[in-house]
Amino acid sequence: MLIPVKVEKALNAHLGLEMAAIYHYLSVASWCETKGFEGSAAFFYKQSAEEQLHFMKFFNYINQVGGHAHVPELKKPQTSFKTILETCQKSLEAEHKVTVSIYKLVELARAEKDHATEAFLKFFVDEQLEEEMQFNRLIDRIHLIGGGPQSMYYIDKELEKLGGTTAEATE
Ligand code: MG
Image (cartoon, rainbow, N blue to C red; front, side, top):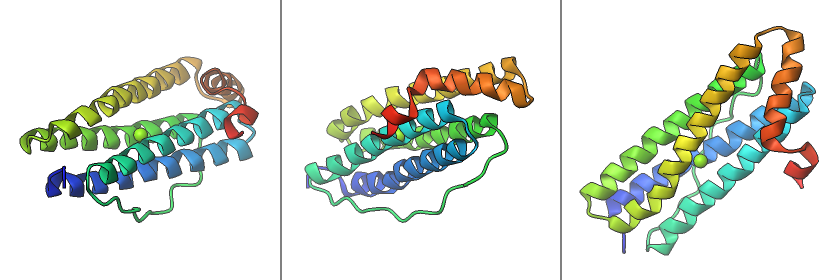
């Protein structure tokens, strides 16, 4: 065992949050697609695919360092939303939970003198900052564009710029 048992347990617990993020974004993407927000759907499908990579990085790491990665149990995510603004607010909340969990993992790794895990987590500290900044910017922009059905078109275009086309994202 290369990692302390406490760290292995905490990493396994964190897998649940990364898996929940895959589900959250997939559920949001599906809602966007059914409402005709193609740009937003593409953006959220891409987010979900990115979360799959995050999940696998944690999963593989646990086994590589002598632990045993467990597939987490999952709750069904929220399936319907009122507006794209709500999907972004819920995404920011979800990302913030992940950030808090990663910061706790860093503190634990440090306390256990597990420098390898602390180094491994650096990528995620940076990634979380980017994710939270992205949703903060999007929420600010949506507030600038304003509410109403016509503004949804422009909001969808904003997300399209970040996500590419639906076809590319789902290939
Ligand atoms: Mg993630």
